[in-house]
Length: 230
Image (cartoon, rainbow, N blue to C red; front, side, top):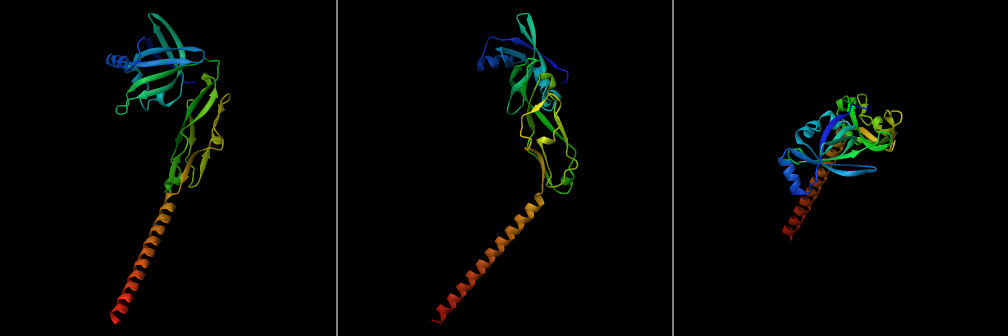
């Protein structure tokens, strides 16, 4: 398990849209923490700290991990291990508007998604194929301390038409994969063949239309000649 990140929070009593606006104006973000046999708590967290930790592309955001949440209740501080359940972001700025924490017990198994990372440029792509990643994460069941940071797959040797399935993943001991082992993760498509077939089909349709127009014109000319003779 990666080293946990410390997150500081304060108990809040207010709720609703107007309360959220006031918090944002004070440089705070509304949050909530809940979990199995854990009473939900409404919290506020520092906006600068949270947006730094969970910035898109940041390791703490990309890799699923346990965080240490410090909860200040009027000077009485407790800490709980948590995972991120949901992050709501502004549609334009990507800044965090609300965050949900899920309190975990280190001796109790949980179900979480783990990201899949692909490394290398497939040989099939170098030959004109297209890499398509079907699964970007898989659900696992394990103790919080056993959560893999991510799964990594080397796709360098994949040729056009090749695929890698869930069964290929290297699963750590004490971790159970919940996804179908036959589910494809990544495949290399051959778009050039499809394009050639589409071009040939289009050319055939154009030729057929041209032949139809020619036959129509010929029949029209024959009809005109007959009418003239009469």
